[in-house]
Figure 1: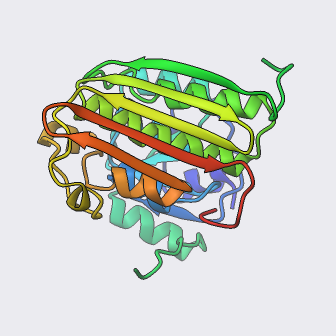
Figure 2: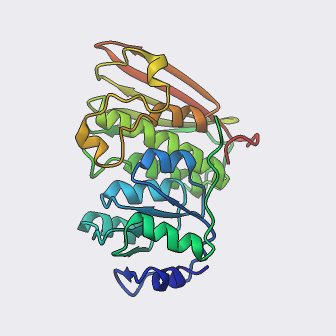
Amino acid sequence: MLLSEIVSILDAEPLNEEMDLGIDIQSAFASDLMSDVLALARPGVLMITGLTNIQIMRTASMIDIPAVVFVRGKKPPRETIELAGKLGIPFIITYKTMFETCGMLFQAGVKPILCAKR
Amino acid sequence: MSSLNSRDSFVIEREVKPLDFLSAGETASDFKETLKSLGIPADICRKTSIVAYEAEMNAVIHGGGGIIAMELEGDRITIVAKDQGPGIENVSLAMQEGYSTAPDFVREMGFGAGMGLPNIKKYSDELDIETKPGEGTTLRIVIFLKDEGGVE
């Protein structure tokens, strides 16, 4: 599914029109814990989070996450927006909660990632 | 930089400032970019940047800053993270997922959830922790250049 379709499903706003919304997204991971993202996410996975600080973009770039969804209408601060631009990571903002965001994307066919038993 | 290849050896060293959350992660990003520019496989670049990032965050949060170095030599990448912080009182506890001594303001940023050292172990091939209460901590982390099918 294209990121542009996710924008429309979530009634979301890309912050600027230069962002590449043509990225193909197959799976997603939702978390406000960045170390859990680093532990479990995989390259190519969409990150859904309610945090907006600069380390969200750092985390995304370390694990090759192609795009970020900020939930609950959170607008990221300037430094986060600047780093996202520098790293080339598009992000979108939705006013839906994390639960509803995940539910809608799951229903639309976006897959979860596996969390192995240990 | 682009004239180097993976057989060349080099060391990059960066200073990490305490509690500087705006710059935290720049070192790990630099390391990743350097490895990518040398044509190192993407999964090795990713593992190295994740362990360097977690080590960097530990130095920023707990270590009062420190020095992070990346060495590429022969068949391996070695990350050495050295701080002069309070040291780790109980290493086996610190290695448990979820065990954390981080303050609340760090948790509010999405870190300090007790996954730092476990993540470093998960993504590395060798991890050595040298620590003494009151004298700081040194992590020595090795990632082999040949992917042996561990964590993707």
